[in-house]
Length: 105
Figure 1 (spheres, helix red, strand yellow):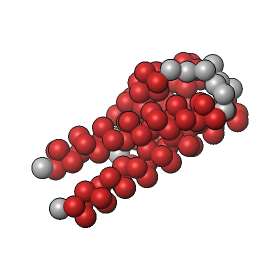
Figure 2 (cartoon, helix red, strand yellow; figure 1 turned 90 degrees about the vertical axis):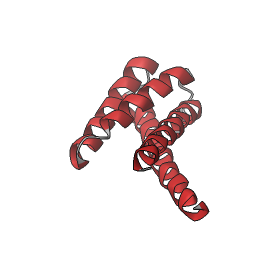
Figure 3 (cartoon, helix red, strand yellow; figure 1 turned 180 degrees about the vertical axis):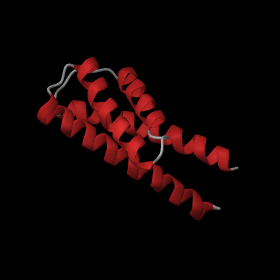
């Protein structure tokens, strides 16, 4: 059961982070497709499985680099706004889903 929770948490985090990236790109008027945002969210979520400080740092750096490569956005303020928004949405949505699943048990 714990493996299922891990897989579902990962899938929800990827989907909500990709949605956050896409919304952030729409807000800052940067061109990008949703499939590219799914790829960026997937890679960054996988890197987030490393031990606590390093996974977070690797995920953040890779998200900046992949976003700069695939979207052509400027580092500041566009990429910073997009990354912070997507991280916040992905992080809180994962815990919201886990909380709601705990209530429904």
